[in-house]
Length: 483
Image (cartoon, rainbow, N blue to C red; front, top):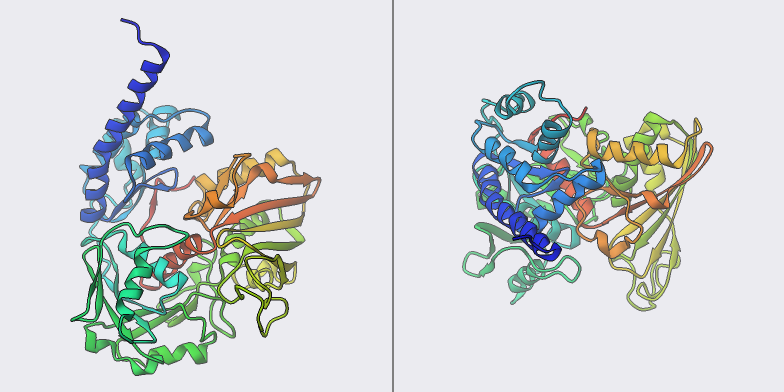
């Protein structure tokens, strides 16, 4: 009996769902038991749904021009699950596509091919020790960092959230902190279970007990009293911005290192992961993760400068309003920022263009910058107007950036979209530092204009977690290696 087109489509969809459902427990076990994070063309599958897995497979055709079916990637996932692997990030999409369609196996069986491509983590023991983490401040970035750390649990997890430090302590404070973690107007509900432990003054989330410590300044806290030692303190308050101020954290017993989730002043290293994280050594006790905008534009600028060279340029940031603006007109020490954020476009300044030079010294003095705050609560855009060292075309530039987003050391920082319909709300929850909007690219000889979207909250927070891992000495490879 011949099936109709609708019936064929339904049968195909059911097959994809079944494969995705069978993938879920394997992906979960690989992460919990072995520390293997499974991705498909950079799209993470840990904690994903069946629909997320199906959609991740659809991205392959966008980049390669050919489908990768779930029935083709499933044997790769199964084979990976049977290997003795140390922790790492494994892209089963790239492995499957290359094996099936790029003739890279050279006569090897699937198992032999995987052994070759995953040799860096095959039959290796995990020597990395867990590190205690304290979130000092629990605002927008602090809560997103908590979500990122709590969405993945198990013995293989090395960054362990032990406590948050906040001011307050009044009756009902714990429940309010937990409620803000549980529900978010922009990023939606927390993926998991959250309960308040009044007796032990903490929050229980996805099997993790988080101690809530009340303090007005860092030196008041003795972390060892709560079983926390050699901790990485992540300062989300923005109160301390130089080495003198941030070093106050190191006076607390049990604190070992400090990471600032804002641009730093003075001699504190400003790190954009993917660009200059290699500068972090064991001796660095205080580090900054720079700003969301600096993280969004620096990887793209590095890629362009390496390939085309940048003579000079201007960065204009169209940025969602932030908590330092007023909801309605009121006094503000900064110019224009006192006007109602949800009602106005507000012209203001940004240090992102000059901050790029701290992570990418070769661009020092070559960029100017400004910013416009706009009435959206999240997701921003950077417009890069650049003069290059050589002429190019829109197609060449976009092809280069697409390849960079897939097959370079910046593949975790740069995403690429060819959609003609994408708008800011579509990028809420993006895990990339920046997303190149290829359809908006303008090229005229040696001049170009690029539009880079970024989730200034979530995408930035993901970058922060990468710097946290680097400071903690947690370094796992992404495989297959970019070629």
